[in-house]
Image 1: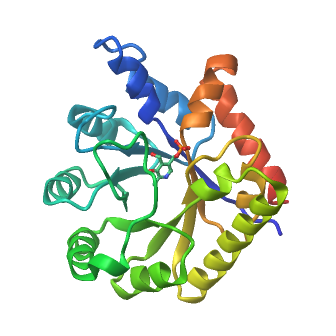
Image 2: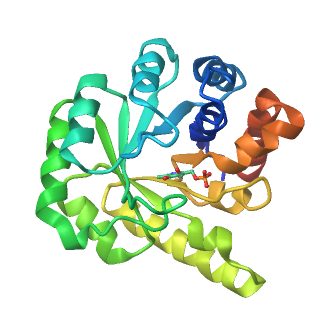
Length: 244
Ligand code: PXP
């Protein structure tokens, strides 16, 4: 197999912890630099409409100090597109957003909003930002992502992560493998993420042609036990071993 899968670390929950007391501890930039130093290939942040973790000033600070590419997750709203065009991250991942959700609960409905999404994708792409659409492992959604000109998709691995029997895990993994192969046959770059942990990440990293995994909650949670650099290295090692 022998492929290198990029590790994007989502640091939203470092900001969640910081915001709990309103100060600067833990310092988001310092943590991001430690994550990079430990071997992450990129930093992912989700600027939510309600600013519950990442805030606008975090975007600017990280943008000017990160050494690895920044991946900005955001809803496809005019406000977010305006911010992205000002911040100019390397990549934008467009996600669905609902105010009351605890986290991103499902993939984007690209099929149902072709023209609106197509316009936002074009604005970001024309500026040189690599746009990815966060979607479920569904052929119609993948085809629609391709049709509106997104060069990258991120497959939502939440259903795989939540599968509770060996049969459903296998079924969800197969769906992701098939979706990835179909997307690649259209020329799309395939990333994946959501709910990935030390215990379920290996088969996803091993999907042929996988480009990047974005991992947040479980890596940040693990860092409470072993420290952030070690947590990053653990995920890196598991992914590398799965791809040998
Ligand atoms: N990818 C996307 C598009 C997401 O919205 C999230 C959650 O913010 C992740 C990856 C990371 O998910 P988790 O925090 O469950 O690892």
